[in-house]
Length: 164
Image 1 (cartoon, rainbow, N blue to C red):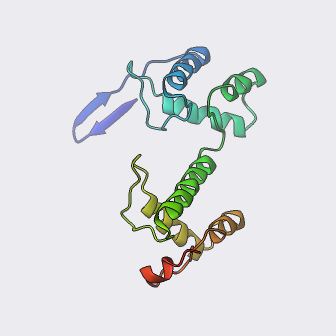
Image 2 (cartoon, rainbow, N blue to C red):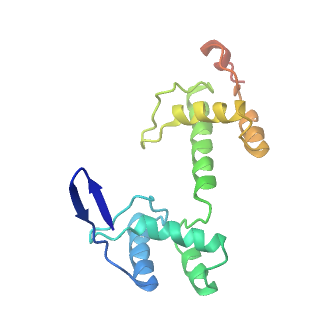
Image 3 (cartoon, helix red, strand yellow):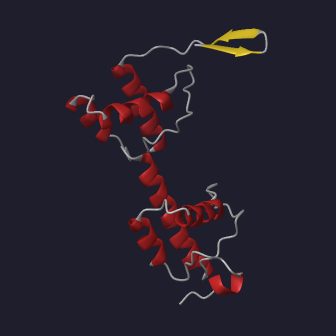
């Protein structure tokens, strides 16, 4: 792969791996982190784009281009998922439920970040934006509306502090 920056040309050499070698790298990652959900941008110590490889496996699965053996191996890894975005949404939803329990309010300040670095405030703003644009699924709308104190239009902090 070549990247051109101004008049300089850099050639990046990502090591090539067989499927089994890539899987072994993912398995080692999963064993170390107790989780096979690798960030898309994750590069291993030897320079292999493991995040890109996992993304390609999900794409191949959606296109029915992945063997049953490979599917079974991936699904045997801890916390492997085919639908990363659904899992991420559920993670933030659970964090919001915890936030409401701990703070007795559904109001999450826009810049609020959890102890683990999750930008929960931004996530809440984004859900409201998707809702206004008609781009939030009914299932997600129902889940959010079931939370005590959740509102779509934020008028004031006082309105959001009314958690039963």
